[in-house]
Image (cartoon, rainbow, N blue to C red; front, side, top):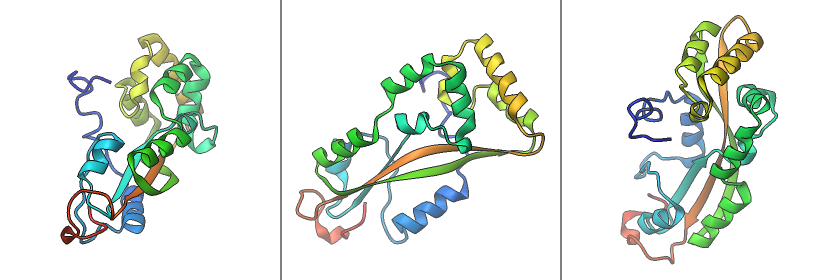
Length: 196
């Protein structure tokens, strides 16, 4: 996705964050009293700026997430079923769980753990509200890979399958956590082990 394009520039920064994500962060990461930074960069750059003993959290959609057949993620499943060519596109841009775990280990992280997280992306009061967002290609960057005609067909299929009342759109993510060893270089311990 080209974030320099005015039509997609604020796709992620304007996203709604459901309380389920915030609750997960509070429960698992326990950020109170810690320095937290939200950055987008690769594992090698993260290890350089992370304090000794600090925790890195990486959230990404893997190929496994994108291909999930779980009914919770039926919107993405229908997209892949209707347009199988998108599977190749996803395979090229999405990491697989094992490869990314190895990347973190190779960068010097220890205690690498993997969690699957189901995020409520958005709640819609009606199917019409949801259809309007699909028409604008909001919420899923992969919708920009569809022609206008393909998007119309996808919207029609989704509207046929949608319940008549409120709709909850969920996305599946993989979250990796890894610690920077207290023996590794970086900021001194005076800043507090476990802080980012």
